[in-house]
Length: 292
Ligand SMILES: NC(=O)c1ccc[n+]([C@@H]2O[C@H](COP(=O)([O-])OP(=O)(O)OC[C@H]3O[C@@H](n4cnc5c(N)ncnc54)[C@H](OP(=O)(O)O)[C@@H]3O)[C@@H](O)[C@H]2O)c1
Image (cartoon, rainbow, N blue to C red):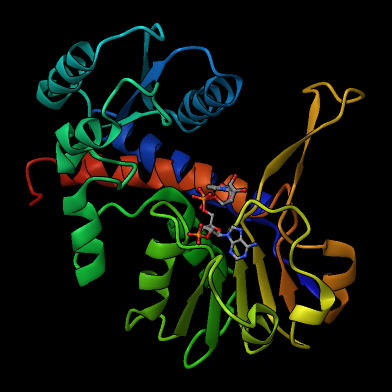
C-alpha cells in the first residue's frame, strides 16, 4: 500500500507556483490577485478563507478579503460582485459558500464573470468543463485529478466508482474522469444506489465523497484498488487546539491494507483543493483578455 501524500504534492505545486510568480516579478509583470468575499462569521467559512489568503501570501500573490455582515442584502452582494468583475487589478475572486439563506446563492454565482470565476462554479465554466474545453474546474475535482496524475496512477480503462453526486465534487469529478485524457469508465453512486457494496467492489478507483464518516469498509473495496477519501466531517475533539478532528468517509485502518494507493484524512484531498484555487488564479492571470 502506498499513501497518496496530498500535503507533500500540494507543497511541491506551491513551490512551482512561487517560482513562476518570481519569474513574473523579474519580468516586471503584475502578480496574480485573488479576492475573496466572506459573509458572516461561520467558523468553517472563516477558516477556509483564512487558509486561502495565507496560501496566496505564501506563493507571492496579492489577495484582498472583503467582508460583509450576515444581514447583507442580495443587492449589496451583487453590487460588490459587479465591482470585482470590473476591477482590472483582480484576476479572480470567490464568494465563500454557503451564503445566508436570504441570499439567492445561484444568482450570486451566475453574476460572477466566468473569466474571474476561479471556483469554477459558474454554469459557463461547468459547461466548458463538460465539453472538455479550457475552463476553471472546481477545486476539489481538479485537485483529485492532479493527485492521480502526480502519483502516476493508471486511469486508462479503469473502473472508477464515485460515491456522491454533488455539484462541487462527485458530479464534476465524474465528467473529468470520463474525458479522453483520463479514460476511466465511471459510475456515480448516491443514496438511492442499489447494492452499493457490490458496485464499490467493482472499482479500480473508488472515490468516497459523501460526508458520512467511516462509511467505506473493507468489504466494499477490491484488493489493489486506489481509494480517494474526500470526506471531511468535523468531529468534536476538545483536547485539540482547533477543538475538532477531521474524519474521512473511509475506515482507513481496515481499508488501507487492501489498497494499492490511498489518501489519508487529513493530508490527502484537502491540501490539493487549496492548491487548485491557486492554480486557477494563476491561470486567470495568464488568460486575461484572452478568454471566452
Ligand atoms: N477535502 C476537501 O477539500 C473537500 C472539499 C469538498 C467537500 N469535502 C467533503 O466531502 C464530503 C462531501 O461533500 P459534498 O459537498 O459533495 O456533499 P453533499 O453535497 O452533501 O453530497 C453528498 C453526496 O453523498 C451521497 N450520499 C450521502 N449519504 C450516502 C449514503 N449513505 N450512500 C450513498 N450515497 C450517499 C449523497 O447522495 P444524494 O445525492 O442521493 O443525497 C450526495 O450525492 C463532505 O464530507 C465534505 O466536507 C471535502
